[in-house]
Image 1 (cartoon, rainbow, N blue to C red):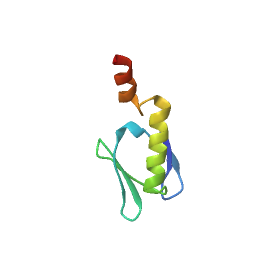
Image 2: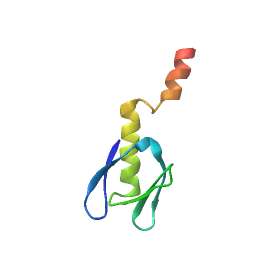
Image 3: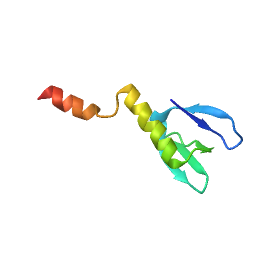
Image 4: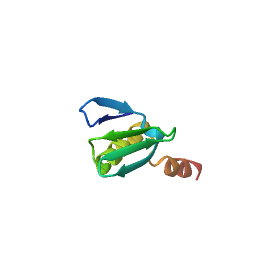
Length: 72
């Protein structure tokens, strides 16, 4: 889960696993796999960094490398 900020200043949480697309239109939009779209204050790069950090926390980054190394 990542914390992001709506354009009106309200902070809310998005499940990073459901993020399908992040765009700058020019406001940053986060589209989830269920079709919901959120406009947030964070930049595309900030949302990507938050998502990557979350993936590392839950062990999704380098998961394939760990499994391949374990099997060898």
